[in-house]
Image (tube, rainbow, N blue to C red; front, side):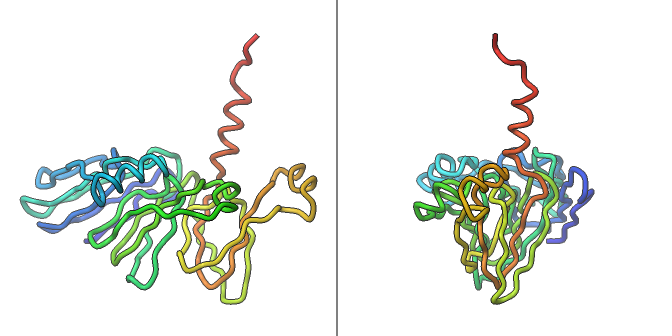
Length: 227
């Protein structure tokens, strides 16, 4: 498949050229436009139980879109609902990709979308909950964000501290811990940071330039209060 990410800095979409017989799996309602040679269907990724687990535990769609060029080559345009970026990640089968809830957009054939449980501390404090998406296989994954996606490369032996509200995706081989942002809980909370994630390299963490929790708080502050 050949593809281009159009308008990458402002409301991007992906233009995908498909040969006959090729398929793409995508989040529900991702398709914007397609050639008449392409069919779109709703499918349960991994069967009923895995689809239910993904929907209940990570707030992802129960059904994924399956877009297949059945009657010849075709073009598909797809995107996501948030005002944010789209980035392609190529997997060669040597490792998987851990993706935050609502971060998965689409993937080519050969990619499996599943859920993965986190330990108690990470589930409670990471901001991602007890379950995240686990993307494995060989192919291309498209992840989406709120704000632009910035790749943060961490060399072997290095560490980086990331606000948990800005996480999008990271290799499942990377180690990370949850900790308070400052030396004391009081400073952590009064600084507005609270809990952060300390990642150890090597690997590249994809972060989003905006925090959806902060945006939600701003929206609530603008709503009229009940008398």
